Length: 242
Length: 212
Image (cartoon, rainbow over all chains, first blue to last red; front, side, top):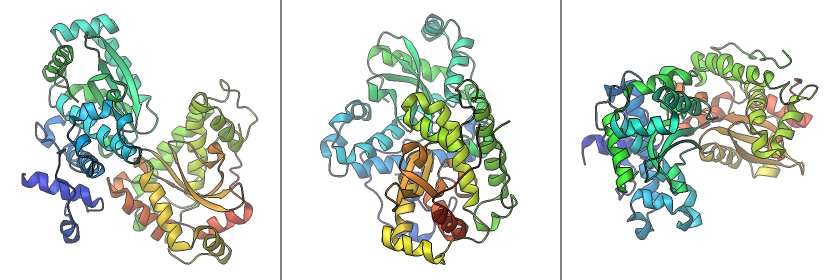
C-alpha cells in the first residue's frame, strides 16, 4: 500500500479529518477493513483535468469522497465473505440478493465505488470527438456528435440534487442516456455504462459553485476518447466491468 | 413576481465567525435560493398554482408523487430556505434553550443531548441532497425526520417543521468540504437560533406569508 493510499484510507475513515492535515487522533483510530475493495490509483496527476476540474477538487473527490465509499463498502461486507468476493459489477446487478440490513450501504457505497472508478478512467484526455465504431454508434443513435453532447449535457444539468448522468451501452453496441439519483448506477438495472458525469455538487462546487452548466460544458474537454472506445469494445465483447 | 426572495435577517458576513463564510451565504441565498424562487415563479401559470399559498403548494405537490416533483423541487426549496435563514443567528447554538422548548424536547425526544444526536444522525444519513428536521408531528409531539432534495415535512405530511438544516453540499462545501458531520455539529453548537425555534413551536409552525 502506498503512502498515498494509506493516507486516503485513514482520512476518509475518520470522516472528520481536517482536509490537509489529519489530526493525530484520526491516525490512531482503527482503520476500516483493508479490502477486498480498494481505492484505485488515479491514472493521471491531480491536475490532469485542469481544463474542466481543478486539482484540489480532483484530490478531495478521489481521496475523501471515493475513498470513503470504498471504506463504507468494505465495512458493509465485513461479515459477508461470499458477497465480498464478487466482482463489483456483479454485486450491483444482484442488489436484491444482498441482505436487507446492508443493502442500502452496499447500494450507496458500492454504487459510488463503481461510478467513481469509471469516472476517473474516462477522463485525463483532451476532449475532441470519438472515431471509428463508437463515432458510428453515436451517429446511429443520436444523429451526430453535437446532438449527443447536447442531449447528455441537458440530462446532466437536469438532475435535481445529487446524482449522475450516464451513457449506457448494450452488448450490441446501442447507446442510451439515463440519469440516476445518489450513487445509483445503470448496473443496478442490468445495463452497462459507457461513460458518466458526476453532478453531485462536490464534483464542481469549489471551482464553479452554483454554475453546474459551466462544469458540464467544460467536462467534455477532458474526456479520453481512446479509453472510452476501449470501454465500448469491451461492452460489445462482454468483458466490460464497472 | 408573486414569490420573492426574503432578505437575510443578518448580513452575509454575520455567520463567518461561526462556520458559515460570507461566500457561502452570498451564493446560498443570492444564487441557490434565488434560483428556486425564479423557477417557481416560472411554474405558476403552467402548473395552475395561482392563488395558492407556498405551504399549500408544497403539500399538494407532495401528494402527487413523481408528477409533483417539478413543482415540489422549487416550492419545497423556497419554503425550506425561508425557514433555514430564520433559524440561524450569529453566536447561536448551545444548550441554553427557552424553557418551553427545552421541556418539550425533554418530554418528547428524551432530552437535548439525545435530540442533538438524533438530529445530527438524520443529517448525516440523508444520502445525497436533502434536509434534516425538527417537526411538530400531527399528534402534537416533536420528532426528528429527514427528507431528500426539495421535499419537507409539509410535502410528506409529517407535520410542521420548526428547525431545519440544509445538507445539500452547497450549504457546507466551502466551509467543511466533505465533512458533513462537522457542519452539523457546528450548526447545533454555533448557529441555531433557539429563540426562533421556540417561537415557531409556540405558533405551531412557520407561516411563510408567500403565495402565488
